[in-house]
Length: 200
Image 1 (tube, rainbow, N blue to C red):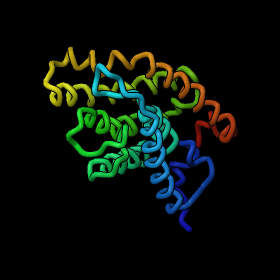
Image 2 (image 1 turned 120 degrees about the vertical axis):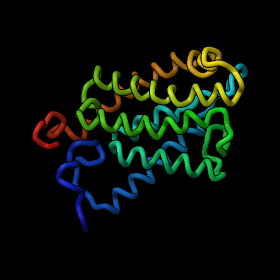
Image 3 (image 1 turned 180 degrees about the vertical axis):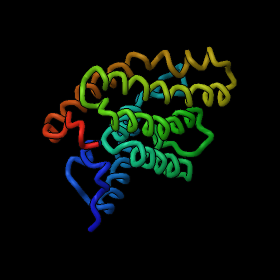
Image 4 (image 1 turned 180 degrees about the horizontal axis):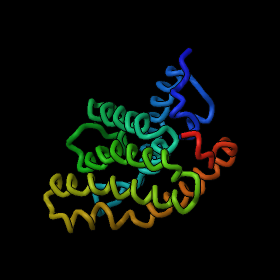
């Protein structure tokens, strides 16, 4: 059984204990499943094609816990499954023609970005986790808003009103929960390693 590389041990929550590449693969699939399950928590809004979901929270949690490579791969598998027709997107939708597909592309990039920040231990303290979550959310918006604008035939300003403004409070709450969850998880399962600067 091949253990994970020494350079990655104790950097991410998923690696506080050494494990094999087979477990790595299982973690990637678990990350994909968590994102898909989070998409089931959907609240449609009558004034916008973008629903409220827990997917963004799941993407950032997966990116931070698994790291940029495995987190982005989890989000990529989710994207590919939905693009291929699996009903894993919000409200059981699938396909690439959805007005919200840009946000899903953003999931992949956000997971990678959040994972890189977690590599620098940004997920171990409340304030830095808030910044991690805010940047991950911004990345998702950067990809989602232009796609939404093109898809529904509006300008960027109107797309921001449809695809950003209604979600700012909810996304702020998700970031607060993330900022409570990740540092607490480090204290619980990774306390001996949480601030060990030599274990990168």
